[in-house]
Length: 327
Image (tube, rainbow, N blue to C red; front, side):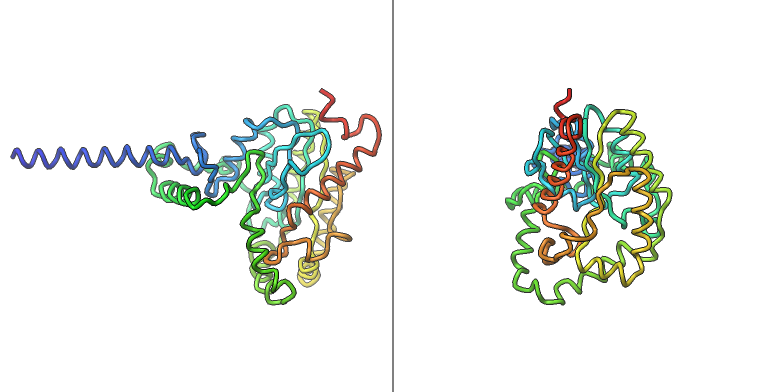
């Protein structure tokens, strides 16, 4: 009997010790940025939680908004008087940008927002409910401390940190493009080989444009964004992201130009001064990653955002050029 009690005690101690160890590990790594204790800068699939947290910590008076294309742009490369936080996150939809602003907008004076046609495809992804926007709303405290999914993400975060990989996100919110540039460098020799991009195009078509259905509900969220910004007296620069030659040909083949015209028309009613960057000087594949016909290189994004900032600065006194210093 004594040995049995000793065995039970050892078993219980091992269970309690393992539970404490697992909870401590997940708390320390915090891969979904639930507790604010992440010290490595590695966030696994938690872009929305990370951005929502750090937008309150990083000193700024302007926001970059949009999807992963805008997410690569480093605010340090932007000119002017505004200090930007990059609040863009991969796969962003209009309603998610609205949720983010509704919850996180504080003392900002300017937002620069990039939009894409795929953000308005409701056939592929139905409207995202507000309560599902943040992962932490779907995982409870116990799940984040003891869950197997979180434990695997914690292990991956630690592995990335130990391997010396740069954090996925900088403190100013922008995505680190080191890995993307390295892949681009490795594939530079095959940049002119059609097979390099042709393997990606069917994947893009299936993920972003299959059974395209233009979402008026998401357009309504753009209107809500405009109303929210107006109510807080926040200036806005809005643009449609550039299209590469490869993507323009896909639009032609899939008959998406008509849908793009609808987006242009709707945006002109909401933000009359929006910038359409889908044609002209940003078509060249050289401006995009060799392995990716969708994402322009970060310096290209910084270039055209600086140009939009410059155009607004040239508009004269009282324009957006002065908005961040008019405090």
